[in-house]
Amino acid sequence: MQNIPICIYKDRDIEGFACAWSVWKKLYNQCEFVALTNNDDIPNIKNRDVYILNVLYNIEKIKKIISESNNVVIIDNKKSSEFLLTISNNITGVVNDTISLCILVWNYFHTTKYPIFFEYLQNKEFWKFELPYFKEVNTAISNYDLIFENYDLIESIFIDDLIIEGTALLRKFDNDIKNILKYKKFIIIDNMTIPIVQTPYFYAFECANVLAEEYGVGISYHCVHNNIIFSLRSKKSGNCDVSKIAEIYGGGGTEHDAGFVISIDIDPVQKILDKRKIQPPPIDFSNIC
Image (cartoon, one colour):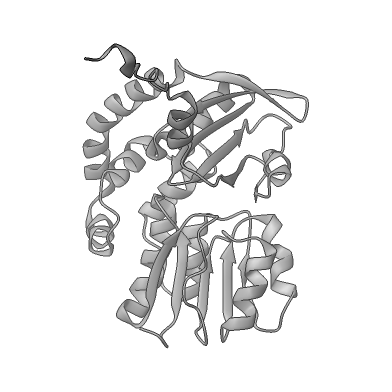
């Protein structure tokens, strides 16, 4: 595995996995696939070709990848990534913020048209509400484990069947969202009062979107090991650029879809438990016979 190319994609994300699947459909086992979050360490990329699908690293880590690898291909749909294509002759790729990332990746590796279900992923990413039953289709897709063979299966399923499958799932999903959002609170960032809610990762996108639709801006967050991952959304008809908020904390994104990660030295639950632990009173042995 040491000399074959390596593909780095976003962990725990159906569109991120669709990007990896697009590469796998071209390279199959002639590539190593690694799912990462923003603050994960760089995997072994020494003297290898590296495909980065969605820039998860800061500029220092990108420069380290450049120095150790053979060639780097960056495919992203965040404007903040455009400058990366100019910093080294060893970097190629494409950045286009008007197209879904999975479609960008497919078009980079294939000459055939992308699978139809990619249009539903794009509809969700850009929150366009253009395709009928896009929420049902996305809910059905999210119910499949993230393995390549499953996405082969999804590609073969008629959209009408995905709609039927997703309809029942969506009822429970929407009810879960309502219950999660009961526990939202408000924080102040850069003089803005913004609703925020903690959620399991598979509800993060939707919770932030629902908050954004109601309040103009919304944030959800979840914990993965010692990383706190924040998802930011803003209403399409509004004028808030959430990528600017994300950049305050070292993140990035687009005007209406952004994120950042904060790493801490110790698991937050462990930290709270250690801080609140009540020490038992010392035993008085003088009264013991």
